Amino acid sequence: MPKLKTKSGAKKRFKMTATGKVKAGVSGKRHGMIKRTPKQIRQNRGMDVLSDPDAKIVKKYMPYNR
Image 1 (cartoon, rainbow, N blue to C red):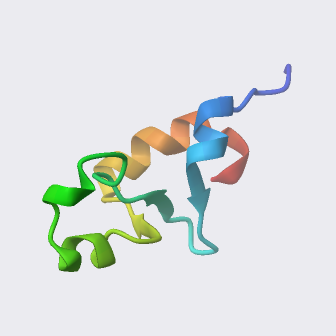
Image 2: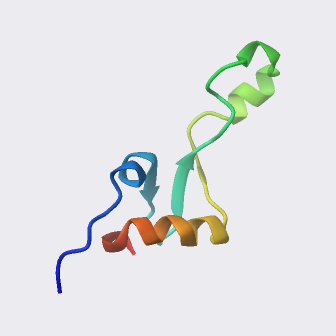
């Protein structure tokens, strides 16, 4: 069997936890920050764990990280 290739974009955007969950950056931080409340800005820092249906899709793009 040939080697499986990971999707380069997925490699850069997502990280896998030790238990197999998928972490991704929180959305809504690119522009228009003046409209956001300070609480929203604080809560959107860092990364967040994806829901199971979304994580299942991402795991298809990262075959060696299952």
